[in-house]
Length: 317
Ligand code: UGA
Image 1 (spheres, rainbow, N blue to C red):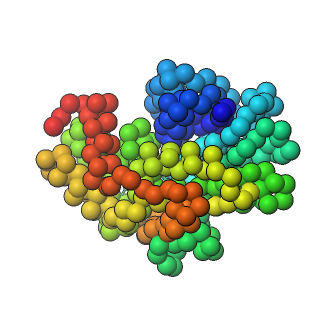
Image 2 (image 1 turned 45 degrees about the vertical axis):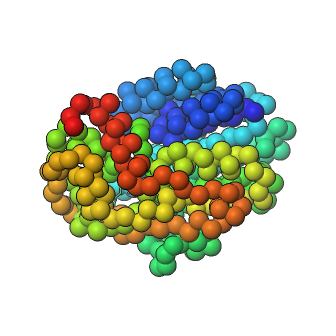
């Protein structure tokens, strides 16, 4: 099987690419190496992916020649995008439109009537739900994002669905709920927390810390991709990928204190605009149609994330 993984130097894309290589897939990665966070981290991820036997092409989906790279592809895993809820306000918005909406549209146009494509898997987001009214939230809930980021992820998901239903492109969208684990992006909560625990630096919490997330371990998200990429579901299918953790940020900090046997230097500041208070995904559909369920508990996943931070950023106990 030949896979194209977009965003292959990113957090989920690089973890997925390495897993696909372990499973014997031919993997071509595409990454634009944008500077939203330190490019060195992406170079390190990319080096691990190429060491696993994949090829990585440095190019931007918005203007690259897609024909040759998509030639003979069986499955496209579209992980590339402009992430981050907090940076999507104000002048920061343009890259969200370019890298989430336009890039996805270009890719889908290039995959219409494609002779070998079996699946197109889009990395959607729990942020499309906004402040949902009922939990766990099912896929049939009316999306109502509360950040510009969420709006662009939803627009790209709608494009993915309509290319599926209108033109029969075999698309599947996976709505990821706050993915964490080794190599998580440096702007995200867990990487900040475990790095601070290792380096004994301050942690800043946005709001009360009582906000709840359905944190999902990266290997479980990768497994969902593999299942979505190899299962013939109806074009335009959409699934929640949620870890079932339902923990508050304060609960996460308490687990981290226990794991790191030490105090954390925590302070509380203003809530971030566009930050939803709670996420929680119903996973009945993905369990019954793809046979997926989360396998990594928050304690175990956080311990693995902390071990990665110790290896990468320090040697503290
Ligand atoms: C995450 C990703 O960043 C998005 O790209 C993704 O689309 C989204 O999950 C999703 O599920 O769809 P978020 O839940 O904000 O968004 O991820 P974290 O950075 O892990 O934040 C979790 C919570 O911790 C948030 O309430 C955030 O405000 C808070 N936080 C984060 C802090 O209190 N301090 C920090 O330093 C960082």
